[in-house]
Length: 169
Image (cartoon, rainbow, N blue to C red; front, side, top):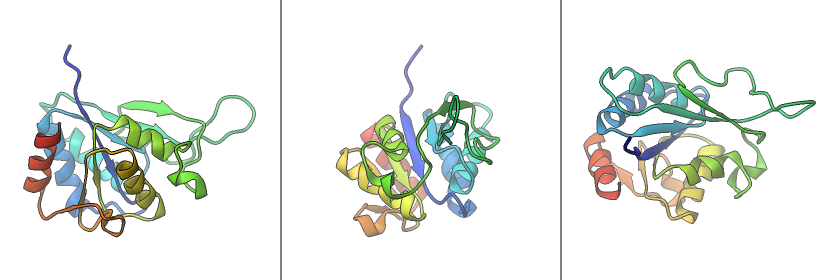
């Protein structure tokens, strides 16, 4: 069995940005990679939905989930995983907060696991992931202004994203 590359898509957990994320997910599925997200709503759900809509795909949708700690095993918060995640990776790490930009965060697991990263518009968590991608020297590109404030190079189209990924993977 051939090991497929993993492309992480980072973006808003609130807004789906369907105009960008659905077609991005479809393109990634046709590219023959696994899709990695944080497994929640917003962009994570929309890009996974687009990815899964491609019938003849090789890759899976991976979701690295936050965990609520308490007594016993960590539990995922409500809404995790979204209904398009095929491979669930549970963690004991919080989903957001001040620790999001550190090497000891769930965001760091997302970035460290990905072979390349695409950043869509999002909030503080997305910004921390864009910064971690640069710090970890992962190939990273933004779309729709995602990661722009962190100095991430921007693509103007899905075709440019595909060219970038083919070159770095």
